Image (tube, rainbow, N blue to C red):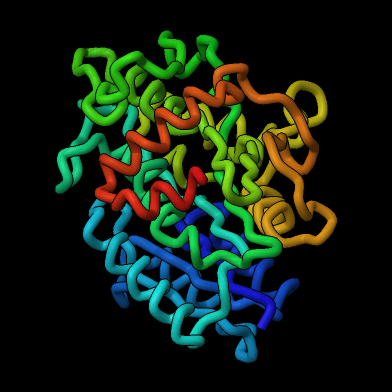
Length: 316
């Protein structure tokens, strides 16, 4: 058994393509795909089922894990850890932290755990998965892949007048400020969730997979003008825009493939750091600050209810 690959948000725009590429190009791996809902009427999960049905010999399973509910994430990691310990599932080769959430049209939303939903879904629950499963990774070649974004750079963008950053009081990340600037602050919360610090115990990479105009994210929880702009202007003009302005402006299908390649392709074995598409690049300077890395991961462990043993194993 080559190992297990955990992919969160497997029924998302890039997630669907990542799942398909994983089971098609790397059938030796056990694919563990998580989605928010496995209900029979969930159109996105049904699309995922349709994709994996094309590969009946693949080792793949779909799991309902609502990342907005830490108890659900704890149950999932406990079950997976037990299956690995009992030999029912091979050790983890990679965890691809793909799922995310944003809301650019309303006030900050709190989860059942009382944390900001954007930060919990996009980062805290992924930190929980990694820390709870840290001793179940392949001891020779395990990897954590965090899906980042160009939005993590500390600069203003057309989507937000605020600059991303790590506040001195980290509690502000999960209990954000509320005012009338819903779009700007919504984008700020998303950007802050993409400030992906590294773990030291295993090989970790962060990838900016590019901006995908065909992503469902631009049709959900976004202002009307953004939906119109993307659907009627940026999506039709994507080939031109990509060629002349931004080479990372590409279909989510390409993003999904690259996410899997960076996680499991032997070409990238032992690689660390930040990637734009599949090229090693430099992230914002704050991401490379080891003190910031330690502070955020240790605080995330507290938010997620991770015991000290798992935390110590991650930072030994």
